[in-house]
Length: 156
Image 1 (cartoon, one colour):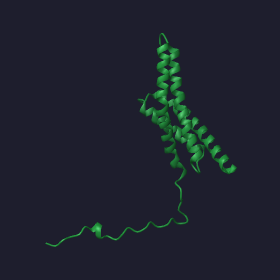
Image 2: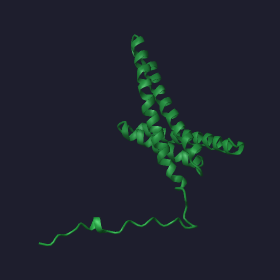
Image 3: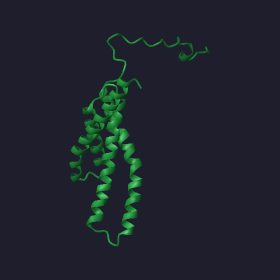
Image 4: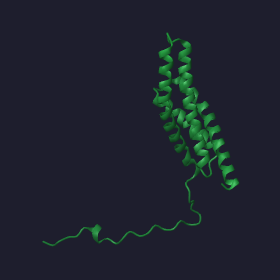
């Protein structure tokens, strides 16, 4: 019986990748930052949510009866946490994306609001928050782009 060697052991070493050509982009396109901004927003919202729940428990525990005012306050605090997280995702996208612009923040805000709508049970009235998320994402990305440009022009 003849001995056979594994082809992996006797195969030639892998060749080095070809150097990038002149026309090939060295960085990913700016739209790749849209999902990254969405991930930052969702993680920020996940970090803010326990604080909102703690605050709501404290408010509801001190109220003798949970009336419409307390329910509106609970909704407003949750909405504020969501919008703050979308703004943060847009800011990170605009600040660290080398060629991003506020339009990318708008797309990230829309993706985040739609994702949070899908996760929270797909209540149709929550879809009204998608345009608001787009506006906040745009504003966050605009602030990030301005911060990026100021940093580069000042030589910091």
